Amino acid sequence: MFTLPRTGRRRFLQAAGASVAYAGLAPRAALAFAEQKKAQAPGYFRFMLGSFEITMLSDGLNQTPFRFSASNVPEEELKAYLGALRQPTEARVSHLNVCLINTGEKLVLVDCGSGDNFRETTGKLTESLEAAGYAPEDVDHIIITHGHPDHIWGIIDDFAEEPRFANADYSMSIGEWDYWTQKDLESRMPEGFRFFATGAHRNLLPIAERTKRIKPGAEIMPGLQTVPSPGHTTDHMSVLATSRGESLLIVGDAITHPFISLEHPDWEPQMDMDKAEAVKTRKRLIDMAATDKLLVAAYHIPFPGVGHIVPNGSAHRWVPITWQWEL
Ligand SMILES: [Zn+2]
Image (cartoon, rainbow, N blue to C red; front, side):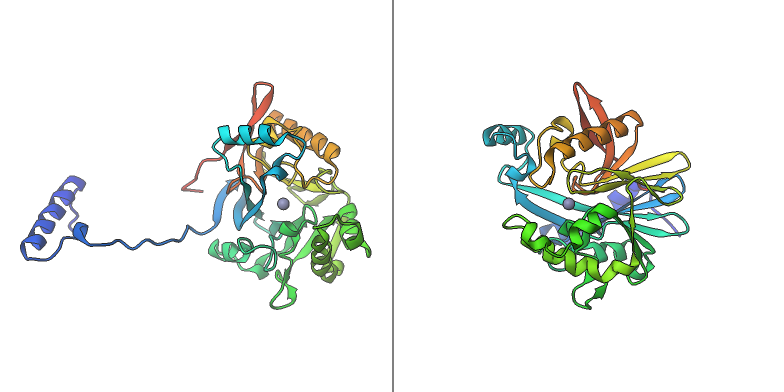
């Protein structure tokens, strides 16, 4: 077929436009409006880690009061810090990035998203998974980092009233399972957060028989090892995925903010249950990622939430992964 070279094509189009105008029709550029699409690209980002295929899936975004980012810092100081970074100072908008690992043998999710009842702007995991070419029933195993709504409320499909990932088994730390399934949990939760307990019971109790309660640090399967990271919640755990010498540290909510967590690891997010323990864990994981030059996946850092943690003066900074066109 005859193909015009680029410069020739432009000249040809100019000539075609001229002839349309000559015929009395409006050329394209003169139309009164251009329809705006108001839709974003599908919510997934894919890359290879050795022989593992990693797909980051978006479950949407969540908004919390901006004070939640650092509850032990004076409001004015926090506002000035975020303002200087051109970050919102009214609300904290965080993304929800679920990591899907295809080991070549098993399809493994780390966390389950927020499901249908958490926020209007969340619960997009199934849509992103399907856009990425997989169905919920393809998932073999789910590792749960902790029991907060944005990580476990996607376990149950609230319309079908049964597990969304029909063929999956689960791993959750013993301490985390025991905490979120205890009978009188609701009365132990602080005012305003009691619904966390109701949701945890609704999502966890139906999968009791399919959930292996593990000690953080245990290996889930070859190449997938859990890492203890308590503090954000009682027995929160992270996951280290390794294939052919390449590693990805999936930190869950041990590191939540692209600037604060790394530049000020002592600033305490409101949602950290044991704040002193969470600071210790955050510093340990930051040190581990920076020293071993690990790739890191963080659930709440801007999508796709994958990058490196690099030393920067007396602290660290987040360097996001660049888009990859070919795998
Ligand atoms: Zn979270």
